[in-house]
Image (cartoon, rainbow, N blue to C red; front, top):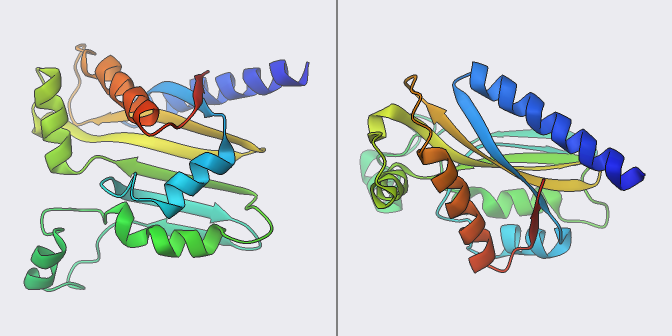
Length: 195
């Protein structure tokens, strides 16, 4: 009975995210339960698996709440520094640059009450992914292709999302992005179940 209630809560949360996301120009398509929390967190925080994604936002709630805005602060890096770091064309920082600090926030004997991370493809990876899919969209049509990782009520979930800059009835990109994310997780032996 408890498992059915958890499943229903996740589905209602997913439906809510889909509605809210759509009205804000973002559409969430796929909801996954990450079934081995410890393994996922080790891979997420201690390896380079997710380092090529950009971090739009992170929220960690433990004894205090921490909000990480992944937006690159204008003027913090010189053009030369940004070029050397490979972030000159980015609006958000790569997860690799923030991962050690996030690890410090999460590590410890007591797990956080909750957390949420929004990861997105870099502009170059987004363009390559769209070309590989053969999408009719251009990079100018899509703001972000994202993965939303959330831990709440002892459940770890991942939802996919695409943020559109235009309105279109063409939804061919969505199932392909979902497929890419499932393949990415499987390739790295990250266990999941579709909700």
